[in-house]
Length: 162
Image (cartoon, rainbow, N blue to C red; front, side, top):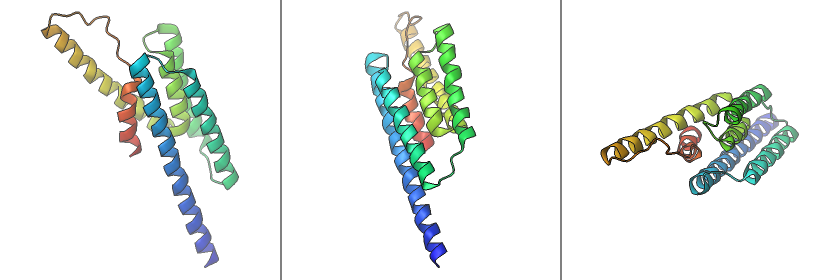
């Protein structure tokens, strides 16, 4: 009987942590999307604060004895590192986008981070196609038009997390 109660309490506590984790990630994505839309860049402080929050969150989980999938976390962050390195050498994607996917990868893991990137890429491609067609119809040049990627990570993140 006591064992059943202990498992029940731990299960509730783990669900609570997961819910809090989702809320933190959604707030992070919303902040990054807003900053990227408004300023075409994201303040480095946002990434540092979120990285610190994730670190504290994982320490908290360790203290509670919750198993953490380190391989999944590192693989998820590796996707962001690859994007960041691409940004450094090609300038086809922003460095902030790479930092975003490092932080989101550490929070979401490999599969959800790849899903986030793919869904965001599909959404931004649709927006780019719409802008190109609209500008073609209006005889405007859209060749140098830049679209903020992180704006599209927010709806993609909502699809993945909710």
